[in-house]
Amino acid sequence: MVTEKTPAVFTCGALLFYVASGSGTLHVNGVKLELGKGSFGWLHTYHIYQFEPEWGQALELLCCPFDYASASYVTYRNSLKITMTVLTENSPVVSLYGEDADDVRSLMEELMEEGSGSGAADIVQGYSLFLEIVTLFLRYSARESEQQEGQGKPFERSLAWKLLQHIFTYSNENLTREKLAAVYGVTVRQVSCQLSLVAGQNFAGLLNRARVDRACDMMHFGGLTMQYIARYVGYHSETSFYRSFKQVKGMTPQEYQKAVLPEAGKEASHIDTRALLILNYLFGHYREPLTTQDTAKALYLEKSFINPLLKENFGLDHSGILTELRMTYSESLLENSRMPVVDIAFACGYNSSHTFIRIFSERHGMTPGEYRRFSIHDGSSTALCNAVLTADNAAGGK
Figure 1: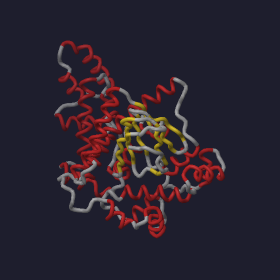
Figure 2: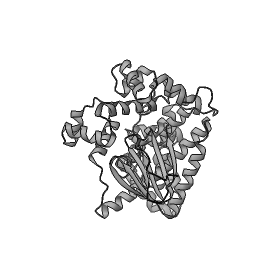
Figure 3: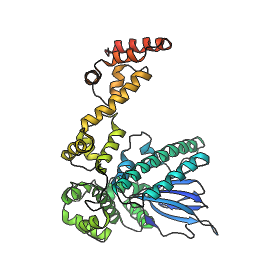
Figure 4: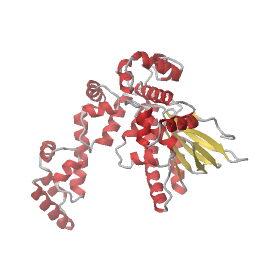
């Protein structure tokens, strides 16, 4: 319950919130956003925020900070096409009513309850709920943005907002104040003034904070050395990394691991949470040409670590799981669409229709075209069957 204006703070990881009652204002990166019952928000590492209730009122908030590295993964690598627009250009708050509001409140309450546990089962369930809630936010945000565009009132980010977002998104690159200023067509002095005014820090301090936050995310995954993490997040030496980390967190990386991350041996689930994270990533990206290296890079994992982990937990390696997902999707497209086989191949993530047909035939004992003939067999589907088979034959997908 918020009864007075909160101090300005950075979001650590991700923060989901829902306003159960009351009204007020959310100050984010120098922008004021109205809050009321049913307001649903998702704040990120580049957001500096304050909650301020209206005079004489209290804001009842359901808040779920989500510190797992998977939060960052979902933020920037979700497969939905709308995701990047929603996260980079839309408001971090949407207004919900009726059943939509009830559904989100119920999920938030469940996530808060699951978040009280520390076992692997609790972490896995919490991650699953997080994904479900985030998916709803993406949908509602895209819908609200479309309505605002139609009314000629699109959401406008402040210059400080854009600068902070750019720093935290591209912190692992060789970013300078000069390069940042050039991106937005402003002077270096304007960059410094805006960052100091809104964040109370200079460019170098914010860049170090962004890199340390990313390093903390990566520490949730085993098998990564501090040297690898330091290099990945943008530091040229471990010494610089350790110094910056202690300045931001008040402790060394090793002390952070012991204090914040679950200790080895305490996880109760027989399925490794990292394996589940990989599985979720494959679910979201199987329709793209995806290699083990692509997955490793996206999830901050060593390539050699992925296949043994998947085999141990699911009995299939990276390629095997992708094949299962792609075959299931292709079966649905063959049975329920008019798409030619060659188009289905590319829609399922294959670079070649010949590769798709070969793998499909090995799995089913028949070609995609034959599978379609057996699937579309009733009289009411004759027209559809003839249409798709004609297209398949023309594309060479018999």
